[in-house]
Structures are given as structure tokens and as C-alpha cells.
Length: 93
Length: 308
Image 1: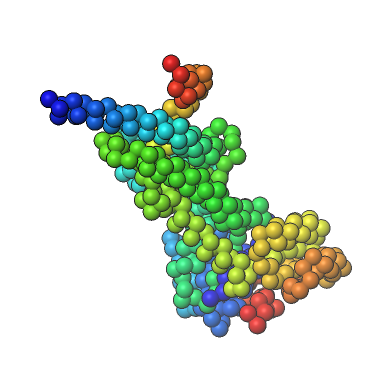
Image 2 (image 1 turned 180 degrees about the vertical axis):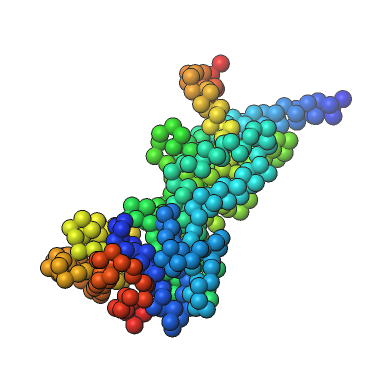
């Protein structure tokens, strides 16, 4: 009888821990995504008229940029609804 | 091994001077002359056909013409193969089409040129002299500036990449073992492909920049006794100075008895901008004035100083 209750409390504590860790990591996660987005934008900026490095540098790094391109794409897609983005980031609702 | 770049305005006789110097130097040393100008005429000057790669002219003189279009194509082809092996979702797309557009993107040709210069300097170590005949001023300055520009960009990009990895590491530390079910993004600097590639590129360009600005690299500036070529040469001197490239010789080409006054004036102006640089005056062959043929061997003056 005591064991399941103890297990139950242990679960609660561990979930509590997870939730806190997740919320602490979430903001940094957003920051990383933003940086990755900037990295991709800087490198491929010539496509939208930003001053950019020599295009061969973009070509050199392109093979390794799969994740950054995905982030860039999703950021561009969500840019239309910035409010929802912000609310999501701050964690309201 | 000494590296010589012949630069100057279009039509002043860069290729001829480069070819004549190559010929003169090849009497005593092993020389490789490479034309980087898309409008090649090295083969015409030597009266031979230069096929792919370097062609032997004499035992001590080798000629080469760089095919820019082919270089860009080869380079992009190499990238495509890496690209299709690392991207999972681009497999379905026709990458060739995408790259056929990239081929015309600004910068690719200059990069291809720079790569070929780098490769030549690295591989052709058994020559005493490598002479590069460059395209007209604008393109030359642009590709000679490339290593410095690229290094600046690489440094900035490396900075951002480091920040990303640091933040990823923070997340990893906070989440701890919890993230074991998800894919963990690389957070170690030595695991990150992008950073690794950036470092590699940085090393390459630093090495190339050191070579180009080093004591074995010599830029030769060819000009004619006329105001137009004087003005452009002055701009070129400023450009070289900005890039820290060593101007080591001025050549006043196509001087005749008639334009000697102008030649003296232009030379004085040029000397004013580059005080310690030696100047060589080359007479225009008399036969050319009368529309007759002239040979490379007719150039009697020794173009490159003996001390080199």
C-alpha cells in the first residue's frame, strides 16, 4: 500500500521537475531558433535583397543547412501571425 | 617559388608582357604561365593550341588557360553530390535545374578563379615561377579581394554559430536526461558540420591570403603612355594598397619616339604614387607600327629585374 503511494508522489515530483526544466529551456529554445533563423537569413540573404556573403560561401555551407532552412521556412510561415507567436513564447493561455 | 600577377587596364599588353616575361625567365628557370582572362589569347601569342590542363611549350616553359565555365560547373557539381547525400527532403527535386541557375549567380566565377589560383599555388611546386595573366582591372581586384572579404564573413558566421551551439548546450544541460527520447541537436563544437566547414574554409583562406600578401607574391602593373590607362592604373594602385597586395614592378608598354613626352609624364605620375617600385619601359616594336608581324622575341628589354 505504501509503495504505490510513494511511487505516485515520486511521479508527481518528477513530472514537476520536467515541467520546470521544460519551461526553463523553452525560452532558450526560442532564442536558438531565432539565431538559427538569423544564420540562415544572413547566409541566403541575397535571395531577398539583404547584403550577404559571397554566394559561394552559401553554396559551401548549403549541404549542412537542412535544419536551418526548415527553421527559416517555418519562421517565414508564422511571420503573418506574430501575436500568436509571442503569446505562445511567453506561455499565456 | 615566386608568383607573379600581371595586372592593368584592358588592352595595355598584359598578356604580351606576361608571355614575354615567361619566355625570358624560362631561359634560366622553370616557368608556368596561366591565363585567367576569359578572353584567352595566350595560345595565340605563343602560336600554339592550349588543350585542357597545362601544355608543354619548351622543357622549361608550360602554358595553361583556365576555362572559367568548366571550373564553375565542376565546382557546383561537387557541391551537388554533397548536397544530395546530406539532404533528405531535397531528393525528389531536380537539383540540376536549381544549380544551373546558381551557375550565373554573381561571385561564382570569381570564386572558381580563386580556387584555381589556390590549387595551382598548392600543386605546382616544382616551378620556379608561376605567372598569372589576369583579366581586366575590375574582375582582378574583385577576386583578389575575395580572401579578405570571405574571412570577415566567415568570422561573423562562426560567431553566430558558436552562440547557437552554446544555447543548445544550455538547453541540453537544463533538460538533462529527459531529452533522450528526442533527437538531441549537436551542441559540441567539434560535432557541428557547419562549424567544421567554416573552420576549414577559414584555414584555406588565411593560407591563401598569407601567400598573396607574402614576399613571394609580386604584382606587376602594366600601363601605356596615355591618360586613360594612367587613371585606371592609379585606381588599381589604390585598390592593391587597400588589399595589402605587394605591387613590385611598373611596366610602361608601347612607348614610341612620338609618345615619349607623354610616357615620361605618365611614368612620373605613376612613380609619385608608388615611390619604391622599379619601372621598366618597353618600346613598341617598329614592325607593329607598319602593320607587319612582330615576334615575342623582338622584345629586347628584360622585363623582370635580375634580382628576382
